[in-house]
Length: 489
Image (cartoon, rainbow, N blue to C red; front, side, top):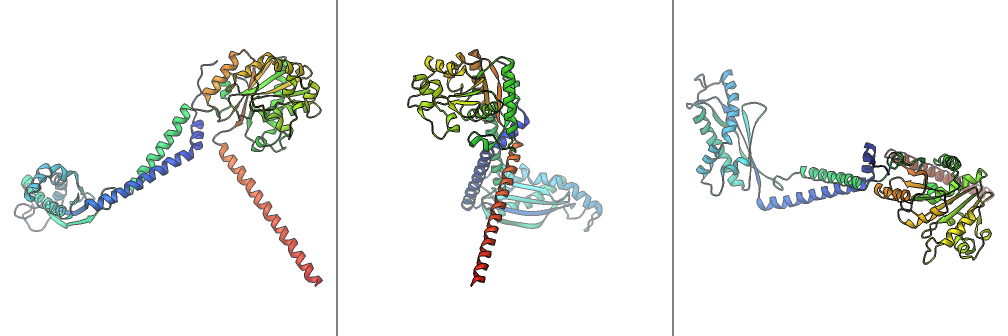
């Protein structure tokens, strides 16, 4: 078996993210709910702690200790304004300096307050590169916060002048306090928590994709498993749920099934093969419906074809052709000797016969009598197609190797994991059965989701339009009937 690994493609990742949109949405909503809870808790915390925001604004002026400008006048010149703007950044540093915070604590005689506590809760910024400075202090007490802000303005003025020998800080807006709902917690918490939920959802989908990757590219059958791809069948919901009849002419799968039938004939004839069984990794991968339709196409080509149901634990083939199965027309009756091969085989059409099996309370395993009975029936047909149980679930399927020429392996897109498919293929190859090829069923990609949605909406529109027309016709008939009644009266 090839040691190649499935390559991670961008389309695969996008497909699995779209596939997991419900999980991503769930985590995003959970994140948003957590954010709302945090906001509520913050509101309660704000009510209890009485956290306030104290704001003030000051201006730096190029004044000396005599309150005169650098030109020794009482009115500033242009150079005084320029000096003040150059002093603004120095003033910002001095306002939040350790020395200034210590002066504030000492002057107010604050107990249990560290200089770093005030500095960390104090925001100092210049207003549009001017000499104006805006201050914001977040504090637990309104009264104490206002006192601290007033003292910051006073001590900063003194410290700036003593340090620079020029420059004064004058108050523009006196300190004013406003209550903070929930403290510093704002609506951004909602956004952040929702984004965290979104990221967690995406990561969850990616981890699930990496450790439980499914096959969504038909090319992987050849690239990874070194198996000839005979057909990549598109998804057809009507075929998946219908009885076995030829798909309609506009069906997306009709031509693909025809192509698969012809490729099987060519492949079997070229290798002198007549009897094959079709298996898969797990159930619900479409083996039964596909093999039945392929058998119908073969019979239409005039090939004498026999269908055998060998999924002893979950027989489905007979129900596709008959509403009710009689015990005498089953593989069960044939291998027990209750019916001969003429009576046991069910005739479907001119060239197609069916040997179904019925589910028993204790399903039989393949035994020599059963295999011998099937081998005897197979002699009279050009082609024999056997619907076998999934080899990934039941290794007993490999007993069929004694009476068949080859196996056909089916994979349903985005269903079984790649590891389980590898295990199934390895089991087949280890049994030395010839694998005639593979069929990729319900081929899909992330782009197909949009096509399927469009097709569904188009069909819905047609159904609504048809119903509306029917109602209009009914109304017209009722109106004509009423007019005729009135005329007769």
